[in-house]
Amino acid sequence: MASLWIWFKATQPHSFVASMVGVFLGTAIAYARTAAFDTPAFLLTLAGVVLLQAATNMSNDTVDYLRGVDDLPPQLVSPFTGGARVLPEKELTVPAHRRGWIGLYALGGIIGVALAATRPNGWLLLVLGLVGGALAVFYTLPPFSLQYQGLGDVTVGIVFGPIVTLGAYAVQAGSLSGEALLASVPLGILVAAFLFVNEMPEHETDPRGGKRTIPARIGLERSYRVYVAMVGSAVVLLVAFVAAGQLPWPALLGLGCVPPLLKSERVLRAYFREYPRHMPANAGTIQAVLFLGAGLTIAYLLIRTVPGLG
Image 1 (spheres, one colour):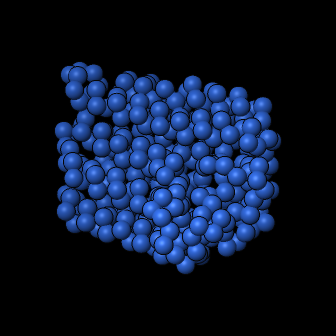
Image 2 (cartoon, helix red, strand yellow):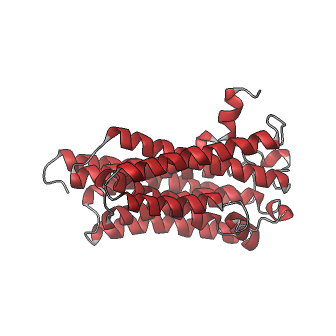
């Protein structure tokens, strides 16, 4: 039997920040605006979302491996490219790996149903869960294979931005929130940008297995420009929402994402054709996701604890 470490590695845990920040943000907004906070429900939400992402990561690896997408030259293999590598390196068999992610999807689904059955207005959670779950399942799996059609970036932006944030809010408050939706938009864009910059090194190898990502379609120079537009729009939208009074001014704490984004842009501008030299841009983008989510979460916790702040 494979060790627990190999199974943990197979889930690509370094990527979990992309899903966890939305749970913290949605929960913090619900706490700030309604004073609602149920610890067991929060922990179940966090577990369900992480399980969903782990299952998606693994199912993506299975399909990529079978289609030859993960057959990469050594210089392209990194924590951000080529998946978890447990299948190419024969650390797990394909059938065992498949059983693993099917089990993770099942566990995540059970948690979602349990939350829908026990929380107020559970039908909202059921709808969000069905949409998010379907997008996750068909991210790589047929018949839609969304990432293979160049829709992976949009998919992860929607799931780990609005759907996760609104779902976490609804778990606590029993309703939806326009404020939570707006706060989730910059977050979703940065999560999408993280996937996008990870796809860039594989722009030539992905199409060999039929994966037509955006970088594979438009090339690296245009991809660099798209990346700049994505991360720039996330920052501009955050400031615009605050300036328009749609988000409270403490939400500007989310601008802590700007320094790692500026560093990532400089690295990518210089090395967008060279990998692993542009790897700091990958790391900086996921760091920006964390800083944006943490800044917004802290802002709403401060709003709850400091009268008149927001």
